[in-house]
Picture 1 (tube, chains in turn green, brown):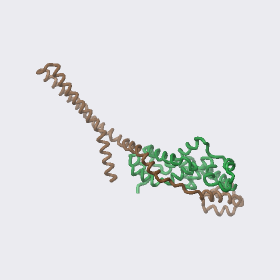
Picture 2 (tube, rainbow over the protein chains, first blue to last red):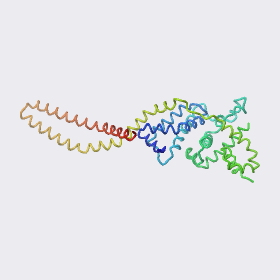
Picture 3 (spheres, rainbow over the protein chains, first blue to last red):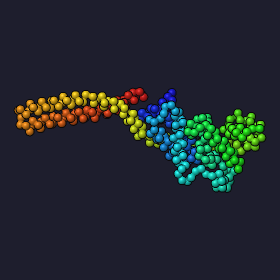
Picture 4 (tube, rainbow over the protein chains, first blue to last red):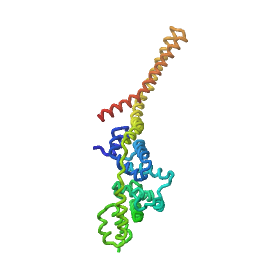
Length: 165
Length: 158
């Protein structure tokens, strides 16, 4: 079975069946990542744009790297750009509590994640939902492993504080 | 006494469901105090429904990607086109030299038996035809290379 890296090389040569196979492999993980990062808003647009960027940039893919890391980086950059658009994200913790009368019952995963600053949210999504190791998360976020650790620790404290409310 | 870093490590591991954290958390008073919040956060994260791509999205995405794939396919043939054109250009000076000699000779022969204007007209038409044929031949090179690449691709992918 062809590796992801071999398939993206074929996509660079215009191979539609290679793209279909890559799509089949990464359809759900990528959709879940974007959905959780944006809280379920504009997911389809960002998802489609991610795949288009993958095809457009396939020739520039470095075969020494992992395809999954590259794919998540593209999606992450799009999500970051999306968060920079109004209305601003992330929501403040106090806003999360204040905007809902049924705070305890209504806090769900989306609101928890939305309350995290973007770098912490990205780290939590990749670590928790995609089961990436810390070094893999660091590769996607393009930062040292120690930074990932501290982001996860800070996220853990924040999530625990929110969940206790 | 556990350090704050140890506690952070263990509670973060607990959040992500790592059973290795259990021993520390159970033995540490600070972690026991935090445990309920972390486990509740873990429960809330775990309870989130799994987002599923809507039906039809795959078709839309792959259709939107088709023109980009076609562009990739064209670009992939550029090096082969460049090589083929370079190879085809090698004999061009020789071809041009011989054609020029033919045109000159034809003009010299014709101008002996025909009025000068008519011989010039005939030779000019002959030269123009030669140039046109050469241009068409070189223009066909990229088309033929792309076609060849497409056929090879089809063969290798059944």
